Image 1 (cartoon, one colour):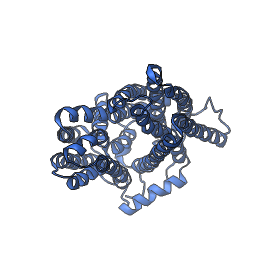
Image 2 (spheres, one colour):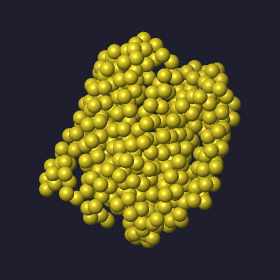
Image 3 (cartoon, helix red, strand yellow):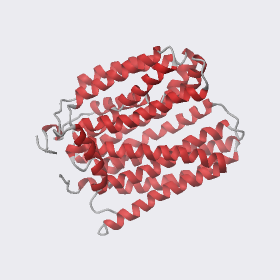
Image 4 (cartoon, helix red, strand yellow):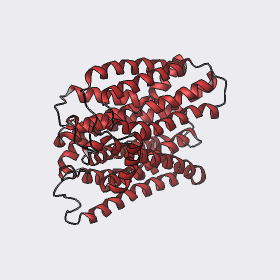
Length: 421
């Protein structure tokens, strides 16, 4: 099959109502495997008699494996039939989780944790798969449904790992997750529709094309810039808030951070609504609303420096706002990139998500240093600066499309002509 020749798997189909929900649940369960290790590292340190610094390597390696897996494995969604690819990755993840849960020492645990992150990229294959199997006018809603599952998995993973680990030991979350992931492999193997590869390109060509599209696809670059700025601010907030809450201002334990994460889980309710807004108004307007929510979040979070009950309430409200901004923006950004080359959905998502994680890493690094050297006010200023950069992206894009009013786009992005190369 020639490069990017349309395939039958790309034709819109009737996903029904149940399948998107099943796929959303799969996104949540799978992505949680990359995040719950953050909550059990103190328990790992005690259980294996190592320092907490050594134990935190587990979460770092899992996240690093996830980022590498996105770049190396997600492009295969355009080259291989997706259903068997997804079930194989889930099986590998389940075995890696089981190995980690039974590991006698840090060596095998770190190796298994890295493999967990590497193979748990199934959500980033399911999202472009769903986008390619639904008609354009429903794409935003379907992406929003899957994104809600993804958000729920990320935000609830720490609570899952912390509570289960506290009562049953650090191995319990790994063993339970291994069983759930194995069950998920069976369910998706039966539920997902059959697809055929979109392209026949070689594996090196897939990777090089992913990098090339970051240079040639303007809408992809636009989505990337929106996400790395807002997501960077989000990461700065969540990294520094743990230091603030457990520091002298509040003097609380890590469980308080878990409670704040549960408050942030409320943002998952907005993702399906964001999908409907994208279908109705287009991605750009939703991005603009997210910029406003992010700037408001920076202002509300600043009140967290006051301490006490009022400060905690401000932190909860501000974190919820920044969560909503990131998650709704994610729906808009992915709807924009999935309106491009249908045969390259996995590669488009690879470029987008890889850059997104780079932005998140930079935000975490800058947030930690801003708090350590200048305090919480500096973190809030950093968030405001990052989100304001997203507003610059919006204005620059509006000038490129000068025939369209920035607040009232005549033709939403997803309804413009699709360009196939």
